[in-house]
Image 1 (cartoon, rainbow, N blue to C red):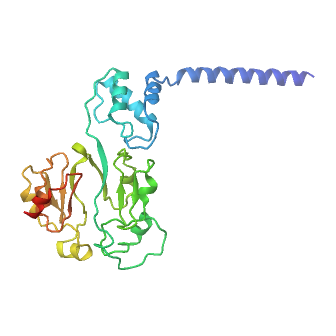
Image 2: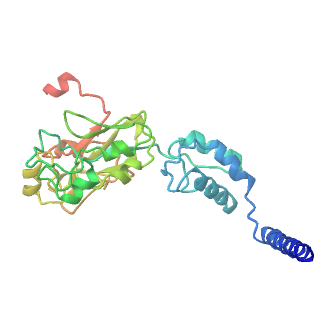
Image 3: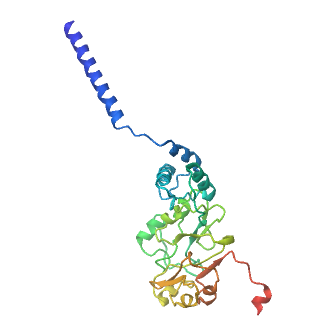
Length: 283
């Protein structure tokens, strides 16, 4: 009987000591969360898409609160909620925030089935990542879209689909929130986020082929050949030619479309501009 009593007393003492140690540790290492983080979390859309550059809305909320304490929210934004949500967050944190230009995903490949015919048949795993790992794909262009739809699978907002006629992904301007998921999913980096532009108008080079002109044209009739005519024509210094391919800086472009007119392969695309009048076309 004495042994049982002693055992109970010893175990009780150990339990009390352990409880005391845990209590002291909980007080010493307690993490106190700023209540504003929860408030910002409630304001954010909760998509957890990662388009803000953080793992989820929780990471962005924490960064916004820390940014407010530091006196600046520059570089922090929620692509899903847009300017409306960011204004609410700024009001909540007592900060001012500059209006950001709306962004949209752009597919920089115009190599349709007609312009970029298949030369081989791929019978492996039907994903862009797998096909890209195996080589150039089914066409002679080792830079263009593979058409398997990894970008489609990555989009949480049903904003991008493969056109069955062209074999290329197309972005729904209304549904796209510029989260960047499709950009990360593309193994060939042909999708990028660009300024949506006034009235949705934008100009960009729809090609990323870095092969020299004759090789690029042999693979795709709509390829950029790096001739530099667009660069010389641009009065705003928005175009540069690097690695045999042109690129238009959307922060400098003034949408004059002079580059579109001089491109010999029609690799430069102008989106959402009004169609020229019939008499202007005929003249």
